[in-house]
Image (tube, rainbow, N blue to C red; front, side, top):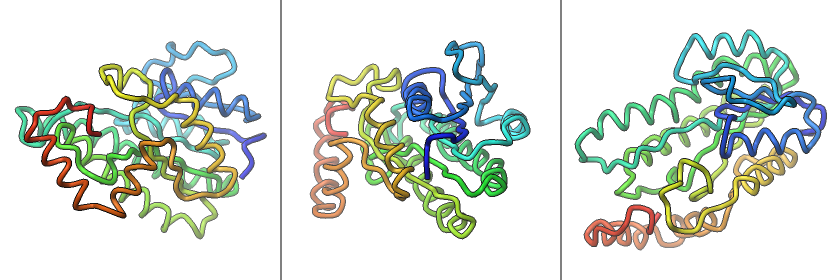
Length: 247
């Protein structure tokens, strides 16, 4: 699919990776980019079209679908990460919040926009996933659970929408240099790199985009030595390693 002349909607577009996606779409020649944000006043680029959008609000999602009927690229970027082990105090609340944004938010957006994309020729849906979709890092386990679920949702939507001509693309990255990973001391990927690799994936009709070196390494580990990866996570937990060092 061509990016030039397309009409895109990016969720969580007011900062970080969402802003990088919006900027990359404009630079690649998209004719319009809707920038979804809980506070549309936070969208300050006059080239973008602000849209009030909390992906956990059914009313917001329905209003966005009614207002953005010309969309043919949907980028589900909005996400939540609360850094909770599975048995930590409050882990149930953390998981519910992460699931609401990372899973049910994506489901709501695709349910609302899949008919719009079909009307507009099929188009493409991008779901921003994570290396956490593939394995469990114990210090961030509730987030991993949400990303495992988001991966299953993405694969199911790909199967269901393929014959409608809609590409469904999963994007996998390690830590990205945004506010979400502000407390991470390890290596982080520039959001612009993730955005550019994603747009290349749309252009070349890929189902999956490996967005950085950490994702490449974890992809290999989960296939070549899954038991070794699990053992490493067990040792990290026993050692009480800083939560961002073994991710």
